Length: 228
Picture 1 (tube, helix red, strand yellow):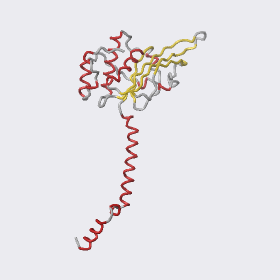
Picture 2 (tube, rainbow, N blue to C red; picture 1 turned 90 degrees about the horizontal axis):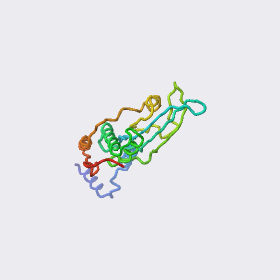
Picture 3 (cartoon, rainbow, N blue to C red; picture 1 turned 30 degrees about the vertical axis):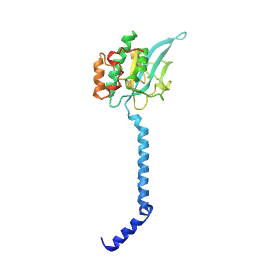
């Protein structure tokens, strides 16, 4: 280092800290951090849409003729739960197995009709005991409506807003009534056969152990008879 450069360096070191900072560089860094901060906020806002989430959804449709007119109508009944975020690292496939297990348990232990609205409601009431996080901000409940039946037109369910799909949420449909009518609805495109019969308690324990979340199972799970 030459003597001139050395003196310049010593002089710079004696300056107050604020004078040693390249203000243009500082401003550039702040702008970059601000932009990263904005991206981070947006990412957080969108993050919940990426968390695997399910909703239990009972629907039953029946065709009838309106009394006195013989006009064909469709009665639509819905029992819809809050959405539930899955335990961390659990797949939708394994979540379906958990719901399948709980469905059979509440039906057997409470002597209720399989694949009924009551069964769906009871499972939704206990799902949080198995590490599923309820999303309270979304609508839920029991709904009924009547619509016209037109043989060559799709049956619409959008008269009830809660029936609409929620971005990022997988609906697990339990279908009662006339399944042929259900196939004519705008809901059928979202339907898939998610139910697996005969899931055992050991299967459930394995699912949770594989994702290192067996601590989320109820304390008395090994002796549990699921009921509400």
